[in-house]
Length: 319
Image (cartoon, rainbow, N blue to C red):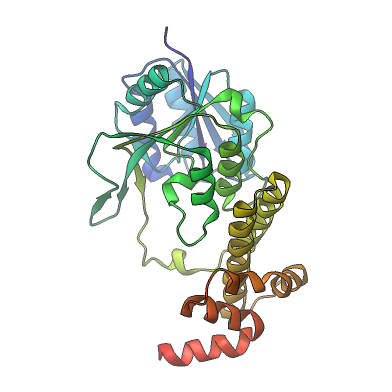
């Protein structure tokens, strides 16, 4: 008997892409879906598009709310969901039409709590796929956590939530941090801690849209840039509770690098760097060199001690 799969789609200012996204969901070969479209106060015609699709497909529920951000929208979707399994879709992306059928077949066969599929990056001038294979891999909990905790080597689609299906029971007491960006990191970390079986299916079934990487909007400062440090500090605190030395070492190093990166952004854009994180950078910078005396680590450490000086030297070298 087919299980009910809830698909949660937070929507904001994606009128150009939304029609293709919704069509790729309602036309899935796996039909037992609950589709929750959350119009997060979008200023364009997204709300109208959602309501029109609700009229032609009774599996669709539409929620209209004032703009509160993706994390709160996803949390609301989880709360309202009736499915045995949950999937998240970004409203400017689209799915291969057999994505959910293939992933739910894997869940039924292997009884896994999370299944992840391969994906394609869609640019205006090219498409890049992770790999064009149909291999199945079983990934160990410790491996997943270590991979996520290594900030320099973590696997972005493994951190992202959009190419996965989750068994709803593992999401109990797990939510996205309200009002934060980079929220997927903490959400995935908490999920990985609870799983017993994780399956990766390599076929690229999810299509992730990348906007023009040279656009001016990409280069503007996001005022919430400091959330990157907040998320990593939250993850570090969780590793302390786990009392696993390897996890703690990785999290201390990654938190240190997140602080350095945020400090760089603050100097580059001439904005205030919070005092709390200045103190943390002084406290945790020793963990940068503990991870090895590479040129990159030495640079990061020197930057943490002499931020303005190192930034100016970096700018001179670039010229």
